[in-house]
Length: 461
Image 1 (spheres, one colour):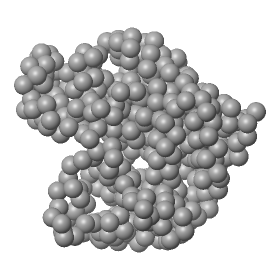
Image 2 (spheres, rainbow, N blue to C red):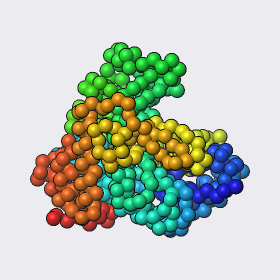
Image 3 (cartoon, rainbow, N blue to C red):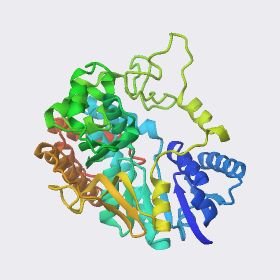
Image 4 (cartoon, helix red, strand yellow):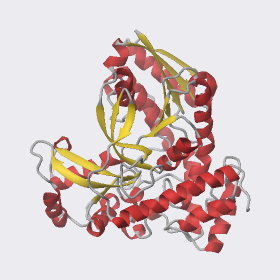
C-alpha cells in the first residue's frame, strides 16, 4: 500500500479538526488502501493534547491502524505531507468581538465583520501572516501538497496565498449547503431532491438555477409562489434579508442574513439579532481589559440562550468545548464537509462534483477578474480541482458588488506587504459599510493599538 500523509494545522480547532478526524476514521478507502499518517499541529499545546487524546481513542475504538502524532513545530508537521488541512484562529471570540464593536463605534453599519465589512479587514490581516507562513513552509517541505483551507475570511486569505505563493490552495465552506436547506424548507421538498447551480463570493452567493434532481423540472416558479405565501417573520434573522435580496436581484442568495449582509449597506433593517452580538453591560463590564470576560457570541435572535427560562442553565463556550471532546463511538458520523472527499478523489483519481469551493475565477463567473477568488461548483479528480463555468450570468448589480470586494482583496494584500495603514484606509473607504473619513482613520488607529500583538505592523504612508 502507498503512504499518505495528512497534516491538520490548527488541530485544536473544535469544529473542523474533529470533523476531519471523524471523516478520516470513517473512510474505508483510507483505511484499506493506504498507510495513513496523520500529523496534528497547533501552537497551543493544551488544545493540541486534547485533540490528540480524542483522536487516539477514536482510532483505537475503530481499530484503525493510522499513525497519529502531534507537534507544535510547523515544519515537522508539514514535511512530506500530501494534504494540509488548515483551520486557525487565535483567541477567536476575543478578537471577533473587537472586529464587531470597534467599527460600529466609529460609524460603520456592518452587521457581523467576519468576512466582509471593516471588521473583516483586521480579521484578514491577523490571519494572513500565519497563513503565508504555512504556505511558504509548504513550498520548502511539501511543495506539491494541497492546502485545504477552512480559515476565514475565506476568499481574502485564499486569494492572498494563491497570489503570493506557488502552493495549490482551495477554500472550503458549507454556506451553499445551508442555502439548500432553506430552499428545501420553502419548497417543502427533501434537500436530496433539489439540484442547484450557484456561485459568487464566499458568503455572498446566489442560486442561478434550481431544479428537481429526479424530473429536471425548473423549481424557481414553484419557489416564487411558495416564498410569496410564506410567513414574512418566519426565521427572520436567517431569511428576511435573503428574501428581500431575492426580490431585488431575482435569485435567492446563500447562506443567510448575517453573512450575505456583510457585503451590502442595507442589511441591518433585516437583522433583529444585531444588538445581541457580543452583548455586554458597559456600566459593569469593561471590554478586553484584564479579568474582563469576552462577550458571548449570539448568532441570531432565536434558539440557543434566548428561548430559555429565567433560571435555566445556559451552556457556556467552555462547557460546549468540554462536551465536544467527550468521545462516544455512537456519535461519530460523517461531517459532510469536503476536505476528505477531496483527498480521496485526488489521491485515487476518482471524479466527484462539489457544490462550492473557493478558487481563482479563471473565467468560471463572467464579469469577474480571473485571479479573484470566487465560490462556485467544482470538479475534483486526480488532476486536482477545477471550477465549473456557470451557465447563467449573475446580474450586473451582484457582479458590481463582488467586484468591489475583489478590489478590497487586492488592497489588503498591498496593505500587508507594504505595512501601510493608508492602503488599509483605501480598502475601508471602498466598502459599502464604511464610516466617514475621519472615523475610518480613528478606527484604524484604535484597532491597531488594541490588536498590536497580533496584527502586522502598519504605519501611515
